[in-house]
Image (cartoon, rainbow, N blue to C red; front, side, top):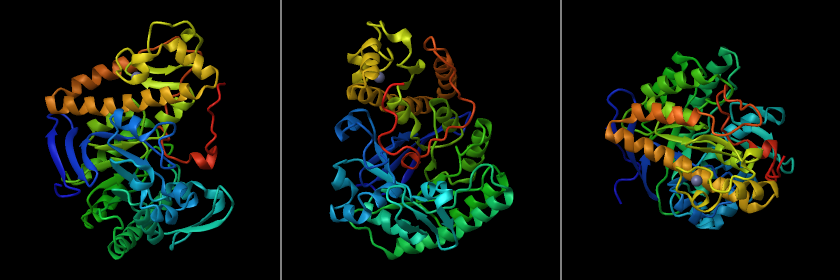
Length: 412
Ligand SMILES: [Zn+2]
């Protein structure tokens, strides 16, 4: 295997910050820019590892918060780690659990040592700290693991964001110390990524990035985005923070986003994305596609016997089923309907970043992006209602805190 966690910039776009890269992990080389499907409970809901693989997924995410509470990261350690437990052979990333515990504001207590909170499952008491976040993620054994950071809401006063940045930097030191103290468990090295905080304040973002860069980490994430700021603010912060980060390391924008957000942020120099929205939307009957967003519940699909979800898509669902059949499955509450919408969505997102990469390498990214965005924003169907796209996406996984796993899979 090539040197693990080496990032190579293959091509940089001549007229924007977009770049195509390669990032080596013990479970495959990631071709960036790249979307990472979210598998909160160590599964991308409804899809098997084989289906994910066929969809082109190269790396999936799992959430430490959820897995710590159930079935327990210690149990996953006894199972031989997440790769062995799930039989997913490609790369994995785990978050630190920080975002979830910070969103439990009513039942959590934040201090210098960490965050004390109560489980959303049984009310049991837990403490997440920089040290416990690293220990959990050593047990889980993902290729890429994340630091424990403080993520304040977008509307927090500047003084609170200054404090969060300072604490994030102190916690980063503790994360690195614990990461160096605890060995990797399953024979493969892990990469610890830093997380840049700083809200919508350029100077704070710059300071946080500069301090984290001193730790010489194998990759850097931009946190605290898609937490309620406007879309122009999201783009501004993604762009200015990406510009502060070294060219020799991958840049990961956490929790973003919708297809147009991803293309805009690729243009601003982001390499890695994750977002829970596309697969969650699919389970609620709406699918992103090259033709825009399609709501399969809409009556206009009832007798659409000859057209797939997206004629430009080569996924199994689009090659085999009409919109009319998918609508029937969904309206009847059939599991296959949710599975096919999810399968299509993951395939489309993988194709989106794959195609962007191809155009970056060919030197045609900007023209292609413009054309793709125009196509995706044209009305794909007669809509039964307005679609709110004005705010930045909240694409972070807080699902279990809001709706637990039996979430809205029944037709409205
Ligand atoms: Zn498809």
